[in-house]
Length: 146
Image (cartoon, rainbow, N blue to C red; front, side):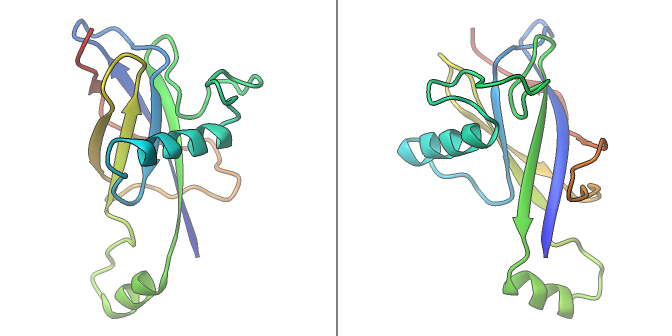
């Protein structure tokens, strides 16, 4: 079984203005540590969002998934597969807990250090196969730095 989540968020600076061109990746497992593994994650996710190797958009995709616009708004999507551990837990757990309770949002902006935020996804609505128009809301994120 596959679970899909779609979420929107906003990234602002210290003055509350939107920060443009921040890459955002939503994960259902802890992200790799800084370094080559994290770089590979962004490259892999960027290719899924139709970005060229140099990081520029290869074609118009509306508001790019995972790339903040001039108001700081961004859209992220994540897909998770339920493995045997989830199936066993869901079969034994009568409390009705969802298969995923936590997600990790990793943000990257050129010239600034990468930033990871842990997000509770309890109560989030899942998305259909074609994603649909509904998106869960992420809290506004303050991007420290310049």
